[in-house]
Image (cartoon, rainbow, N blue to C red; front, side, top):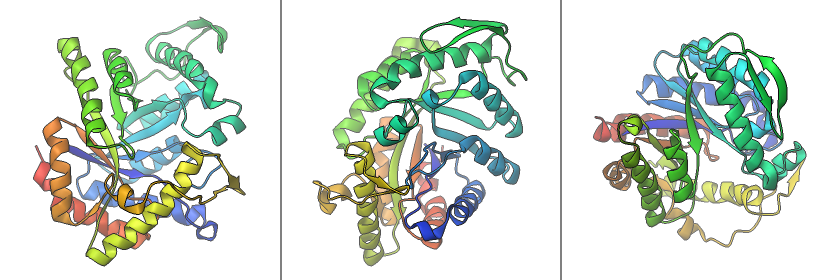
Length: 339
């Protein structure tokens, strides 16, 4: 089982500045490369202080120039916000600039506040996402592509330069519902998922959907992978663990506001709203614990056959503490799951 460090860019207070936050993320990427992590993940979100990364392909190039081995995953690129004729060229250039270490995670968007203000309402984004993905795949694999659809209409054109491989970068589909995971796997996509605040059974159902499709694909599916995202932190002691749980609870008070709530945002900062879920209930769905507990909690993921765990340690802890957690995980946890 491999591990990815999610560089999820949470600006807890505006005074910290985006410049300092991105410097923190860059240093975390360097440490992850040195520590043997498989990959780092970059979100795409706009207009808000959670998952604040409007330019993931730019950041991917910066990281690749300073690292040697680590893969860089867009987790995820929001296709309905882009013109695929422009995005395809940017993607190929990034594939070249990163020495083919880029993995393209794609999704249709998650926050209604953000999507509505960028003229791609969430309730209408699935249809646009599906067509955008079809256009992107055609542009990456064919020359002289023309299109006549609902969202795209254009005469024959060829995206230049051409991809480094016949199909372009690996494409990873973001999906939460087990049946959605099954359907996306059957189409030949790598899968990225998370149970969020769901229980252990939901995680098993998500894995089952992936494995069922992979079995049905036979040899065509043997190289497909399943990545699962979790908020995680290696705590030094009980006091540290409790402090980080409280910080994570504040993070989710903002996250829920834009994910399932009313989307109240002021001057780019998501309002902290009351949560129905208690901090004790939230704790059950997070991996904020000691080294020994972390190994115990991750063992069922390994046994279930998950290929990569994406660890989000950027939920509001200080940069110093996050760096210590990244290093502790690399030295004391990851070796227990090495192939």
